[in-house]
Length: 565
Image (cartoon, rainbow, N blue to C red; front, side):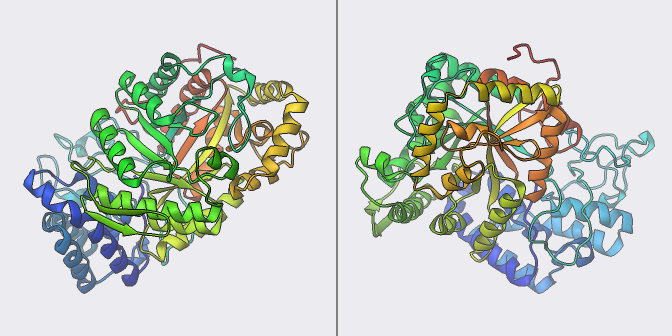
């Protein structure tokens, strides 16, 4: 887990106001069903209010009792139960502040600022108090920082049974919050990709006005083949799988609905275009998907960057108008998911007395990407995870700072993700040889045709992708281990991490240090490349304490990949 770090009293109150608005609508339903607000508590932790009393010398906002009381007055006005639950947490924070040793304060305040919560456990046999630091991490969780001496390794200090106070790596002391995170999040999330336009040992084109290439027929996107990829991703430790949208691929909703029946845990990051269906129907579809899959929907909102493709679907709005419609769409959908009745007479959408018979449980998280100014405003206002394509770290850092600033002005703290391809092998030479093999398979006429089409794209993100290589084949490594060759024959995400397993892991940590928490990856062919990454890179990240298997497995598989390319 990682959490937003609140800087001062003003931000603390603003965040509390936003959270209160979010929690208010579902409070009555949770009470009537006698349901614990687990998701809301996680949201509270991730947003930062539970770390506001950490002292400034340990990186916290150090708010006083009056501000803390106002924070929980606001939360209590929305959901009284939710406001009462953290009282023991703050009692232990206060005890640690007043009575803890410097070592204890450093340890626990570091945990506090990455979103950990002190639980309700009191003293147990073999321990003295929460201050005693004798509570181990949860069973099965990898050590958070292998290089750090573990105070729990002394058997004489180990309690009879574990208390639920997970450990966290130390956080450098700071008096103010930096513009970007300077540390890697405790646990990264990885998503894979379902190639619903077909798969191959060569790059399959398509997207942003470019046609699907013949290589996509090598492995047609049947439910059987896509389910094979999905099951592999699930077993290897990917959280979800992205499915694209467009005339060049299969329908994302129908495909994932079928594939979901062949998986158990894997979530589906379904690409969806506002405007093709009403927001009320979209909210209902998402709610049904959540119930029928056990809460495994993530919604990737794609506004549409190409007017010619939009017109083929009957949509004749220009790009900026499409983004404004997306804003209205998300406003209606989110209100319906909260159980509200909605009336909207907007610029592009109109609904009267819209409501859902059953709201989704849980509410799907909304993913969204866009590099234009109007896209930034929508991201800051409405989305949970902002996605960027795989640009070099310096450009990604600029995007994160941009969106983070826009969101902070609205009292919001979105997470950040990145979309990349990946080619990882046991050695760097093997990985670059595979990249060279893919490049050798690019037909020059196809490259010219695709680049000509992409040059006419209305998408600002696509323009930035194109600028990374300019259509040239001789300058494709644009940052260490970041290769822009994929973008020669494919629209959309056009860069790949290329290198040994250790090199790819280091590049992932480089992006994570900027604030990237989620990685949406793919590779050709998708079945084999999922194994290369899952068996090569994920174990290294697990050993370094920045990833753990979402299925609860102790570690990722480490066997050699059986199907080398």
